[in-house]
Image (cartoon, rainbow, N blue to C red):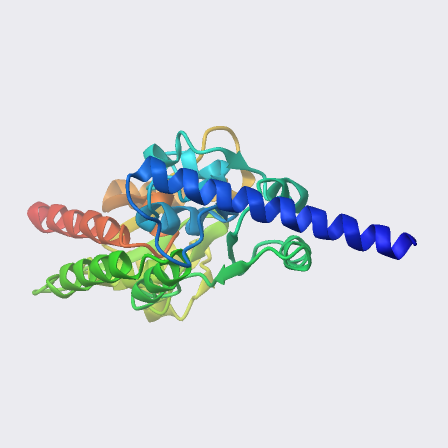
Length: 291
């Protein structure tokens, strides 16, 4: 008897969700003034900052019903304006399930227990790996376009990105630059940040020193790069960021040209990495003008 009651309850829940989803689909189609794409998810929830941005770039109006709290923060999100009026979530399985999504998009490092629970509850989940290189950007855009049923829009965005990236040319000598951010961390040429730096016209001293990961202050000082590019410190005190205010770093910045990397353009593998490259090219032009 208890098993029959449980089964009946489960059927009712799923039927209720189906009815709600159909109603939402009809309403979304009416609001958009055009039929929804067949098979495309209509209630998409993102639980990762980078999938927030990719989804908001490609989604149809009303298709994304919830994003992370970070999505509306201009300091870290390129799509903050678009996310401002979309309900935010905290990435909790119970919270997400109550939104009745027909698709959840997540990052590779999103809490696995949360994603497993959602799958057990019958919620489709699409996981995106981070972009580790510029060549990964088109792949992530296409993956999101496929997940949202917005393949044509994704392909158009990829074509614009690839054309703009191919048009970048950095002739002449390449100044030596150091990427230096929280905890004294640096990135090599095989990373997204390293490739942004190289596309901007610089050689990366991390490759020269073989210091991928932590870069000791002593090595940074001895390398004496032409340019020091640091992260933008967050408000308040942070032990991780204190090293960027160290006298050695401050002296290098006074002696040489310096720049700042902003999380929103550098962290996620979206077409906005082109803006980060443009910032580095402007920094290179500034250095050349000083010589």
